[in-house]
Image: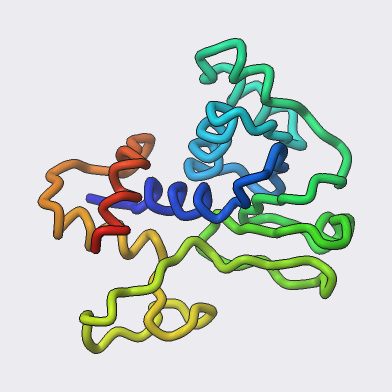
Length: 183
């Protein structure tokens, strides 16, 4: 059983501009958001969250003091990279600074209420050209683009990985990213 969270995390991580030093999480937290936040702290990127409960939960699972120091609570909206989940309100989205990158980590895209911000697609990848009879699986994605969650299931089958990724279990993010690039 594969829920595809690890590939969704990998796609979002690799969508964040390389020179990014700080991100903020907005919207509801999820398994994907938790894994993203942990990976970003470990990479040395400052992670801002807006809710005390999310902060406490993340801080409790960060292993090193260095990683914990990268996690902050933020009530401002000045960050230039927003990682957004379901539950992002229109009011909150309107507070983003001009030029903000809005990168969803959820299955569904946020409503695009700002014309002066840049919206990424939900975690997805282009399918190989040799794959036949493929349309998009979601109506907000272009032709031949599939969500990371669907691709992850296909990759597990192609690679012969006999491991479950569901509930709290998460597959190796680097391993699934490399496999996705090879196929």
